[in-house]
Length: 130
Image 1: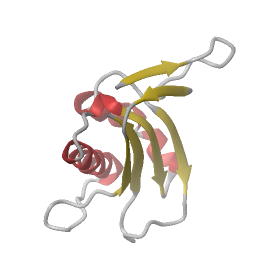
Image 2: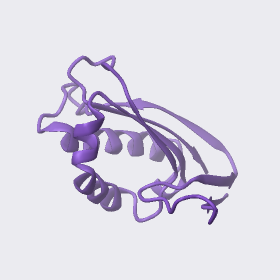
Image 3: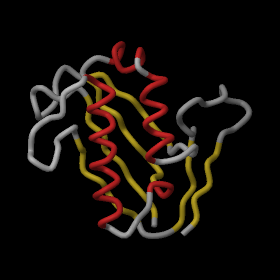
């Protein structure tokens, strides 16, 4: 398995994501995860707490598939309030660094009106190459 971030100098310097990722290996498709605890209840505490739980859930699924956090190659963040998500960017970044590290996959954040779980503020879906 190999993963190489690609950030061309012709594009603005990325912060918290990579412009592209080249990977070789087995592809793992990770279902969207919200901030549900093992008990099936949504965690409280706002978007940062829900992001942390959702990311933890995503990483649990990845590990169960034989992968590791550094093997994430693409991540889509769906947020019901992008302004709130951006306002907590530093805290969310700290959660990312603690759980995943300093490397970032190709990422997108998409504002949506609501998620399948009505009280969820954020959902994470991704791909990994292991």
